Amino acid sequence: MKRFHVHVVVPKLDESVRFYSSMFGAEPSVLKDDYAKWMLEDPRMNFAISARGGETGVNHLGFQVDSDDELTALREQVVAGSVAVQDQPGAQCCYASSNKYWTQDPAGVPWETYHTLGGIPMFGADSRQKAGVDEGGACCAPAISIPAVIEKKVGCC
View 1 (cartoon, helix red, strand yellow):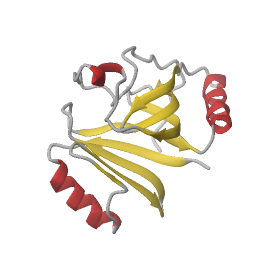
View 2 (view 1 turned 90 degrees about the vertical axis):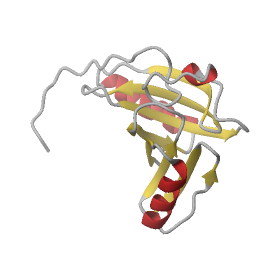
View 3 (view 1 turned 60 degrees about the vertical axis):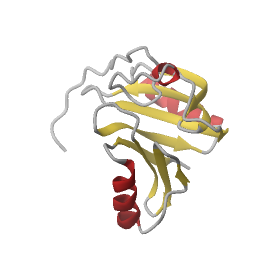
View 4 (view 1 turned 90 degrees about the horizontal axis):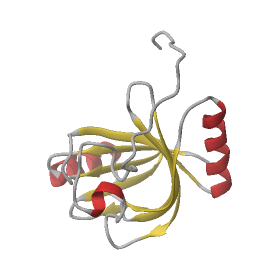
């Protein structure tokens, strides 16, 4: 079963933890000095915030899945729609080890789809985060930019 994922970069983690804890009526399931995550059931969502630099606001969107089989099925669905993906197996990011892939919508919003394999004791060793550098891209996304291959233009809503 899929869980919607939202990651927001915030300027002050403690203020945002208080705000979102109040909004969701729950404390974070993961709370670190630079990161917090709520695993909500209603709505079924993985909502994460971080204060590690970068541009404030929505960092990326995505889906967390329960198995590598589900991850493969969603990847095949995206590729069948002529959308480019960047695989990132065994990724070490956001205090977790995951198999994942990234894509980008036509407006440039990064989308991450992943299956969490287990926790790790640090924020992550992947991509720009390894060197402690954030260039404003998606948290822990591969350094390679993912071009959106979608050419179909549709109207609003």
